[in-house]
Length: 176
Image (tube, rainbow, N blue to C red; front, side, top):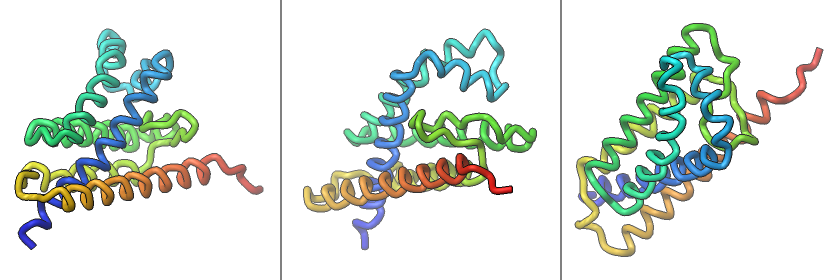
């Protein structure tokens, strides 16, 4: 039981790392679209949009690497902060009635409008990273780290599946 917390920390770290890695790579691949996605949130002054678009992909990739390499507590703290900022940005825009904008959450092919499910997902992921702050990996054996990593990959794949289903549902033609 004493290994449950570090094991959960590894699983959450791997899942969030994969999420950030894919999002960062996708943002780099489509860097010409990113300033527009950021500007659509209408939260930053125009003068800061280009800077945010330039910094965000690299930050996501660095956080992903830090989470995978076990750089605690810095990597989990920055990941939690990013997830909370993203959740807040989405919630503010939903509150403004601006659900129609692309969340910018990852795959360009899985464009999703803003919704409370994405806000909740980010809050759950931020909470799931708390064990990575509280418990180190030093107490875990290689088999436990492998199990945690496998659980993290499975969690990431579930997140990806739910994102794909959400994008498909949102893009389905309306029956009238």
